[in-house]
Length: 439
Image 1 (cartoon, helix red, strand yellow):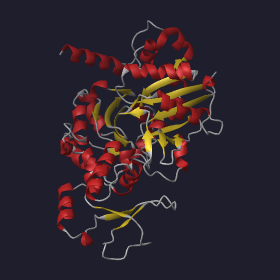
Image 2 (cartoon, rainbow, N blue to C red; image 1 turned 180 degrees about the vertical axis):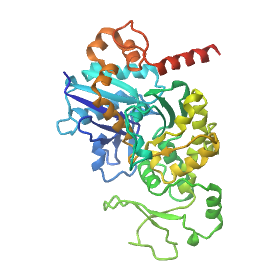
Image 3 (cartoon, helix red, strand yellow; image 1 turned 180 degrees about the horizontal axis):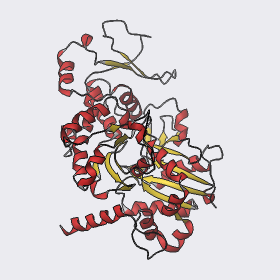
Image 4 (cartoon, rainbow, N blue to C red; image 1 turned 90 degrees about the vertical axis):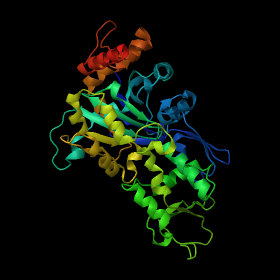
């Protein structure tokens, strides 16, 4: 009998992992880095690095999908098998709950199943789409933290806006199951924003094309989402910088002395700068809000996609009308980009005019939007009966094969081969798919 359940939210930028019983999530960089002094750092080893100048990163997850198991195995081995790791486990005595992005290619899913059962030999395994774990959290506390109504997971209806490293997904979830026909993807995430800021800075001030890690830190430190983009852009271009409260300075790190970079109020160059005279300072003005603006107006850079608010409404058009008002009243924003200042305010400002007048629009962000998916997975893993219904054992995988196992984890079959589909929502999903195919 397996003694523990390991919950792994395998993101593009970081892995969020921990044992369900411990309720403690550990964040691990999901990459392998090579520094300019030729050192190779794997996963958590990056936390001890003090010089990221010109570092080169190799990521096993590209565009949201796990495509490089050679690199991922090195990270997993160090995270889950190393004797000094806090997450060390015996896979043969452990159940694995693993997340993936929506609409992952079946070939990649099969590769993943093979690695889990044949390479690591986990005793049982449940692979699911990450946002489907959100309804297992008590989302009522997000809207009514002082006096939340009674909650029994999963929540009946939730729209998850997951804006992470590779992309932004809009995923309606009804009765714990993803509504497949309504999933929408915007090809802008944290990586895109960092690269865009890198190009803007390199054109205007310092050449930062090789400093991805540093520019990502700059983005997280100074960027915000404006609720009045045109006015603030005009303010940046028309006013003197000395009288412009949008302009800030970012003091670049000194890797030789080990001094990190930091944000400070703008100091005009004619005045003496704070600190030592040899500081290198990056001045940022409209870049602060022009970069994250792409989440709401992708067409600004020629991308033929709608912004987040419009995409939510497009998604709800593919959901039966009886669910739409309930979904609008339960929107949860997760992912690293949710931490950008002004994200919720801008989304609410744009979404309310688009929603029906009679509908209540509620948008919430958890205290930690990066680990909230993992928290939902930990709650699900604690429901032994539900996990047993969803998971696939290694014996089942070896006997029935990967195709049947994939169907069971997707909720299309239950029990042994030959049993029928499960769940009313899944039946409606298949009916909708059939109708679309006929059209």
